[in-house]
Amino acid sequence: MFTSKANKIFQDVIAKYHVINTVDQSFENPYSENDLLEHLLYRKCWIDTVQWHYEDIIRDPQIDPVAALTLKRKIDASNQDRTDMVEYIDSYFLEKYKHVTAKPNATINTESPAWGVDRLSILALKIYHMNEEATRADASDAHRAACQTKLDILLEQRVDLSTAIDTLLSDIEKGDKYMKVYKQMKMYNDDELNPVLRGQK
Image (cartoon, rainbow, N blue to C red; front, side, top):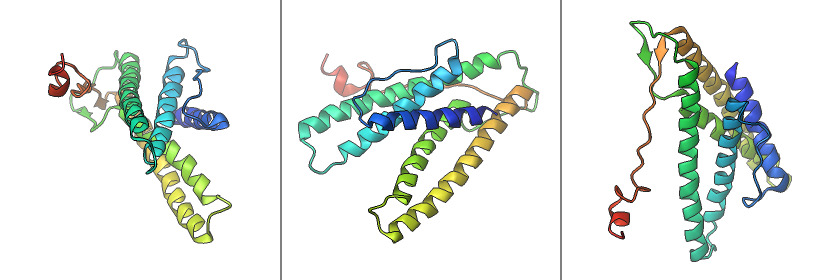
């Protein structure tokens, strides 16, 4: 199943990040572009993992305002990278299934496969960090128990989401579903579409 591979890669990425555990560490993708899907999945989760920790840092109430602004710019850039990677992954699936003829009664899903993958990657991060909290030695028993309850729910959610993604891909392959990709068309990063940026040209 596709999601078995994806979940394993996501776990590998998160474990690798936490060896050094800093947002400033260098990135190396162990998968070449010859293994395109694995390459994209690894890169996608790395972006998500770094951004997860950006989001932690920027919530520090003592953060220097200038540093916060710099970090906000990094988060904006990371969000753009994230959506770009989603589109790359969807392009992979479009290419893979381009020869499939959709059945006359085929339907479209509420989200493309790669946006499901996006949620699966974020879920892997939630599971990793909730597990940390559920096993944190310096936390109270009540804290660990509450986090274990949340962790159990997240693990169940991963099973459900994985099943849904695999089912969607199977349905696309059989022609029961068809996929379309709508580019994100983000406006706030575009010099011509954001009136604040346009006014500074």
